[in-house]
Structure formats: C-alpha cells, structure tokens
Image (cartoon, rainbow, N blue to C red):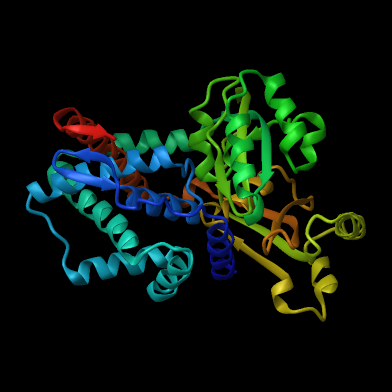
Length: 402
C-alpha cells in the first residue's frame, strides 16, 4: 500500500509542476565562492513537493540550498567525504522509507523531472552534516539515568495539548495548479479569523467550508507528526504557509490552544481503509459516497463493497503515523473510529477517496525502553548543537541573493 501511494503521490504532484525558468543556470544566490543557480532552486522545490514537505516554496528552497552549501563547506573543511558505498547505502535507506528500491525511487523522481544528482546531493550533504555533528559534539553528549527517568515521567504526564484549528484545502489538479497556488498565497495573508473563514468559504473544497473552515478541538497528537511543529509554531490567529499535499494545497489557522487534564496519548499505528470511487467529486459520486456512508458501520464492510472490483480499489492497513501520506493523515486526525471523510481525491481528481478510520493503536509508555529514550535525548541534544553551528556558519560567511 505504501508503495502504491508513494508512486501516486509522485505522479500527481509532478504533473502539476511549473515549467522551468528560461535561464536555468542564472545565479540566484552566492555562499562564499559557491553559486546557487535557478536550476538548483527549481529542482529542490520539485523534490520537496514530491516528498510533501511543508513549505515547499521557491524562497524556502533558496534558504535550504544556502544552508546546504554551508554544511557542505564545513564538512569539507573538516576533511569528511562519503565513499561510493556509503552514499549508495544512504540512498537505498532513504528510498526504503517509501517501501521503494533505490532504482524505483530514482525512476519515479526522473518521471517527475527531478535529476538523480539532486537526490544524491540532498542525501549526501545531510549525511556528511550528520557525521560532522556526531564527530564534533558526540563526546560532549552524555545522557544521565536521571534524565531518562524524567523523560519517562514526562511521557506519562497527566496533561496534554489540544488545538482549535480552521482549515482551507484547495484542490490543485494539474490544470488548476497555478490558480490554486494564487488562491493559497492570498488566503495565507488573512489577518483575522473572520477573514480566513471568508477565504475558506470561497476556496476550500472540504465539508468545513460551510462553517468557514472551522474544526472542533483536536488533540495535538492526533495530527500527523509533520504538522505538529507547524501548528505549535503559530500564534493565535496566525496562518501556516501553504502546504502542498497530493492533489491539493492546505492552509491552517490556529484559533486557540489549551492544555488539558487528559493523559497524553501517542499512537504506534493508525488503521484506515481507503476505497477509491470513480468520478471524483462529481455530484453523482458524492451522492453515491453519502449513500455508502449510511450503509456501512465498520471498515470490514468495505470488503463486500469492493468485492469483484480490481484489488487497487480498496486499500486497508495499519501504518505508523509518520508513514501515512500527509493529506490522508490530516483527514484521519478529524475522525473518530468508524467515521468517514470524502474530502480527498486521487488520479488527478478522477477518483474520490472514501476514507474510513478503523482504529488507533496506542503506544504504551512502558514499552518504550530506556535505550530508546536515551537515543531520543541524545539526538535532541545533537540537534541543538547542529542548529548553533549552522547559525555560526551563517554569521561567518558571505551570503548574497541576486
């Protein structure tokens, strides 16, 4: 299932990508003596869109490429380099996150217009940076037993966070991508809840549009891991950057945030079923989906509905939250067990996704070993050193934008 979704996401996203700038190799930025070209910016933006990474915009790509140059130069100055065997192993591991072989992943990228060199450089620079941070700071990070005890206690905290959001989901099939992007940029400038609600009524394709995109309270841990940091970075009334998802662009506004007495709950797996209905969001298909929703109670009922159809018509499985496609994860966050969403499409808008939440499997705190907690704490500490070093490199370097 992951493989089919991953390939579909690549295809859907790639078909809607903009045409490359006429002067592909025009300089866009310079880091010390290293030039960043328009071609690199376009490639990075496309790559991030294919990965459904948040903030996959031109400006974000330029910032990321500047940081990559700084990381690359720092690793070179430290005498670090990757062997052919090392980079091959890293590329294989990266592709394996989508349950694809390296060859399959590279082929999918090529079909989307992203070069192998872009993929290799992205993985290679991040690998060198990781090795540099470990070599430079690893001996300085010692995790004590007391720190592990405190982390375990915190993971069983008697309080949790919930958020009150509004959403705008703008359909973005290839013929409408430019229009959708323009609408998303416009909605991202909303300065109030009322203004965002107006944009939701005008632009959004979800059932919440009739109430200005307003969602009910959602536990933060129900949201996909990629979205939690974005939401926590918002102040009340602020709007996220446009977030590319398969076939659409999403925006979120934080209306309120609260700490509750409910226990914090993490989930090791989310089980869901996705039944693909021909016709997309046509009136006839939406009516059929509503009729189907009224006639089933649990996910198992969909096996009977899909009986006799190609096996691709129904996806059913359980995945860790971080491995669920972002648009599906966003919809699942709104649902209770047995509830249904019909907000998504696939196949360039030609197939409606009848999405049903089957259940959530809670992670038991006692199943988290002390070694795993120590590793998490160590990684957090190293990330702090990495951020500090990168900030220092920015301050010490000559950086200019064209």
